[in-house]
Image (tube, rainbow, N blue to C red):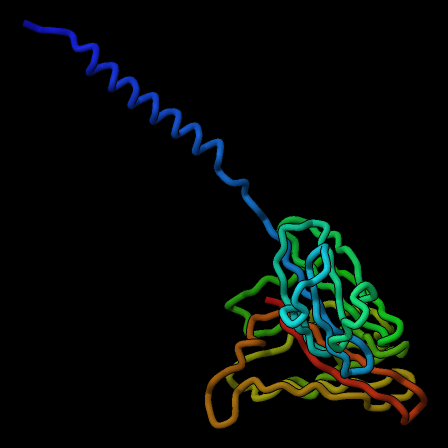
Length: 255
């Protein structure tokens, strides 16, 4: 004779209810989607020697040796979920007065945004500039690098001339603190080197040369830091008088 089993169906009901509760709980506890900001810190201090160490917290660093190192003329890339990002910079490991760092600021960022923060000026009078980037899109059908120039050479307008691979003027009369647009530079297997000359706009004096290899000597290996990439040339230094100056040109990549 058929007998209705309350016990059997009670267990089944408990099992289904438990699964529903588990599903609701999992849905409720799912983490929020995060879109961190990308931040690049650039060391453009004009003595061409001072290095920086960076701390991205609100408190005092516990171990200064673990801070991010940024040599002069180079950069450091950082991803953050903080849209009001604290930044503390120390110069040349000078932490004798931890409450008086070289630079202490907060950077306003946006979720999913790409930002470059230039730190420049002199060791005694630091300046800063934050750029929200619109980097050129990469095209595998276009064998180029995209290069722009920022003039951090102390209060002097500059000209930049491309010597290799295609001779010609890149920018002229680029004012102090001004950032040029991106300019396409050919990159292919026939290009051996990239060479650019920086000149003082007022006098025409040669200030610095940027030289970087494309095809490594004795090989067919291409420099992967240029092809399809966006890069920034940093021109830094100081001018005392005609013939009395210190200048340097370096480039950093945006990845």
